[in-house]
Length: 208
Image (cartoon, rainbow, N blue to C red; front, side, top):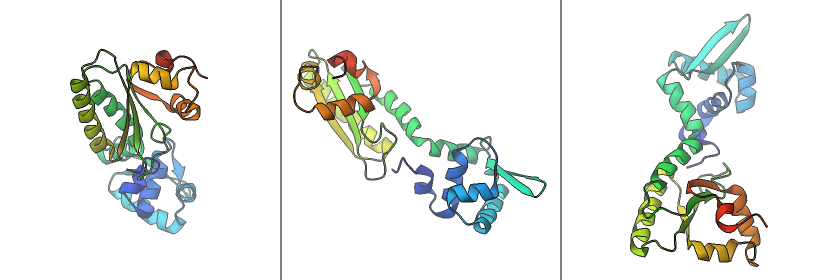
């Protein structure tokens, strides 16, 4: 899934561009301004807006000679467009629900990389760091984590790249005294969105 342009990915062409632009703002916009933001010709934009207004997806009103439009978020279709435009946040919330079901409970399970930064496109991976407790049952952990990864991939629509460490191993690799991979772990620390468990710094120590 393209999380940078989710609306355009599902609704290609000028209509998707216009809906995506409307979903990014709460205020009304003149059609001419909307067309410029969306990169659509003024005449083409006016025709599409008329169609979407007839469907109840867009609210349209005239103020003098100016036509103002906004996404009809109170309509079911408008609400779906708004949710699609903010798909990344919704996926993260649902990933948290999936992560909460992992047994044994992770010391932490977080996402990092382009998805965490809101920059993931259709070719991006969903990067996940899972940290298990030293006392966790290895077989139960492996089975539960595998199940999470499979569900996460279906949910996100992107390949899952999973890093699996026990707590002591992570501290050796990413702690303040570690000498290798500093740039990688600095990036993980910077981007991390925790789905369940402790913050990264609380596990491995402060930033280097």
